[in-house]
Each structure stands twice: as C-alpha cells, then as structure tokens.
Picture 1 (spheres, rainbow, N blue to C red):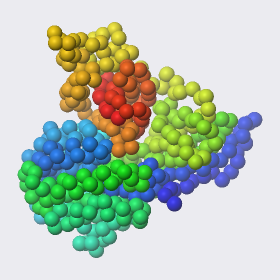
Picture 2: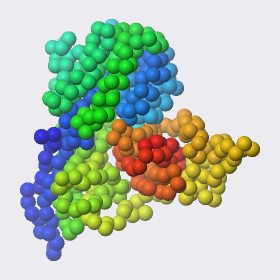
Picture 3: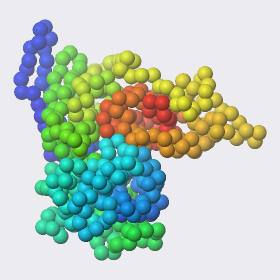
Picture 4: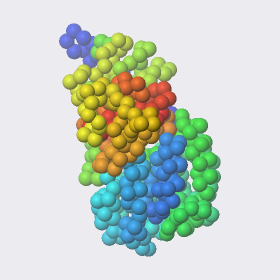
Length: 457
C-alpha cells in the first residue's frame, strides 16, 4: 500500500447535526506514486546551467545542484534556475577533503547569492566524507554522501528515507558509475523506495572543475523520457523536497470529519525547526461519493481530482482547515483572496485588470512592440524573464504532470489567466510550493502578487 491511513474512530454528535468520521490517507510518495528519484549534480559546473537545467525543464522535472562557493559558479545562472524550481544546495566552500567547519558558512554564502522558497536545506559532501554531523543537522534537512555501499549503507533508500539523515545515498553516474537511469528508477518503483543519482559534468560539455566521471546527457534524457512516460509511478523531485515530504509524512496527522454536504480535514505536524517550516505539500485522498468537489485550505483553492470513490489533492500541514464541499458548492470567498494587481512594470492600461495580455501595440511593420506590450504571446517571455531577475524566492513553472506550480508565494494572491485574458483560477500561496492550475494546452499568464509570469502547458 502506498499510503499512510489515519481515521477518526468515533461518531460525534454536535447539536442537531451529526459529524461522521472519514478516512484520510496520506500518500507515501507525492501523487500516490510508487517510488521516488532525485537527480543531484555536484561542483556547480557551467554545463549545469547551459545544458542540465534546460534539459530538466524540457520534461517538467527539477534537479538538485550542489555548488562550491569558492569555485566561482555562475551565480546569476543558478539563481535563475532556482527561480524556475530547481534546488540549489551546498557542496562546501573549498571542496577540501572534509568540509568540517564549512557547514554553516557555505550555507550562508550561498543563501546570500541565491534566493529560493525554502533556503539552502541540502548539503552534498566533497569526496563523500561526512563532516560534523551535529553541524549538518543544525543547518540542513538532509546531507548526501555518495554510493551508500561505499560506506556500509544501501544504495537504494526506503520509503522512510535513510537511516541517518546526514548520510543519504546517491549512486555515482558516468564513466566510473552507472548510466542506467531507467533501470534504477524501475527498481525504485518495484521496491517502493527512493533512488538518488550523483552526476558531475557531462560528456563533451563545458564542465569547469566538474571533470570527474562525466555522464552523457543522452543517458539522462533517456531516463527523463521514461520517467515522464511513467509519471504516475515515479516521483522525480529535488533531494530536499523528497526529504521534507518524508519527514512531514512520518510526523503528520490527518483527521477528517463530515457534516452535511462538506468534509473537513485537519492536517498537522509539530516538526518545524530552525532549518525548515516543513510546509511542503503532502498528497492526500479522502473517501468521496460525489461527482464534483471544491477543495479549499484556509479559503485557498486547491487543485483536486475524483477517482475511484476518492477525492485526491495536495495540502500543506499546519496551513489551516481543508474543506471539501459537495456539488454546486461556491468557490472560495472573494474576501480570502486579493484581486489581481498589475505589476509596476506592466504597461498602464484601463483594460489590464481584466486582460493581463494588455492591448496590442504594433510597430510600423505590424509586429507587436514588446517594450510596450510585454505580455503579448508573441514576445516569447522576454519581459517575464526580466521580471524573474528581480523576484526573490518566487518560482513559477510547469510540472511533469502538466500543472502550473508556484513556489515561494506564501500569503500572496495568485491568479491565472488564459491566452484570451480570461481568469481561470484565483487562489493564494499557502506553503513552499503548490499546484495552482492544470488545463488545456496553451500559454497562461500567472500573476503572483504584483508580478506576472508566462507558463506554457
């Protein structure tokens, strides 16, 4: 079974209404998948920015990129990758034999250069040597070694993660390791486990100092193709994300009750510490007999689906009550979500509040002037890319399962418009990351607070 099941045992009478117990199940892996995989990249190579990030974006997946502070990584490039949902993590300051003494300082140095929704929560040790474990635990959610079998650990982690969170395994890839990404992910699915890969540079690419055991990009792409074809079974996510999910799932309690035509779920844990709020969304399902459902958490609209007598959704622990309303239920109240506001960088127009694409302004050749109307689809995201440069911790991107995902928007209004300028979703940020919309193929504008982003589904 790929879920954790919690239920209320009793039927409670409250006044004249009866509140019934409901089963609420927390998935072992996000999306009720059967296994998990994380791709990690060491040393902060130029090719990670020029080739690795774009390849993962192509398939809607995100990786973990571990940079060495003193090796002068492309901070701007890695910063943009963070804003597109990738995890940027620590690989020490100096890449010495042992990074003891650099646990906190490398984290702080990277955090001063890279803004991302959850901070720097993952560390990968140079030369696979575990430093001061106490310092690692005080600064990171997870610490990564190399092949577990090199240090009397399993290479495949189980559903509850490594036995020691300062010693997470990752199998080496490339000329001195494996290029069988597909086969190892298949094992993760079969065993219900978590496989992590450790890659340095890529064959025939600009790898800077990441010259050890180069890996062909084509092998990674073959693995990503297989993962996308089997997305219902394998969850591909950054190492820090998977670690947060496991820790939250193990500590979480879900209590569901029904009254009238609605179901209320309380999802809580008490593991928040000085490293993380642990507000990564968990996947849940609740028994449900209706054909449609409106799912909200603290008034924020959640994406959901009904299948096989259950309603499925992702929710954030400790972010408020989750309400599943029956057929014909009204959407979240307007008081819970601020109306979309135009970014200060957008063209001023009386129609911009209802049509985020703005009025078309043509040049003498009949082409759209992107400096005047940056949100026209023909501008190919040039203005959006410029806005990304000035955002701190926000990320907006398409996931492998064709959802628009927003990160770093906790407490901010989120509005999605289609290419016709019609508003198709209004909600707000409630955690580290969240799915905000899925729909037909096309280009969408996502307004997060006063910023706008373009996403293609």
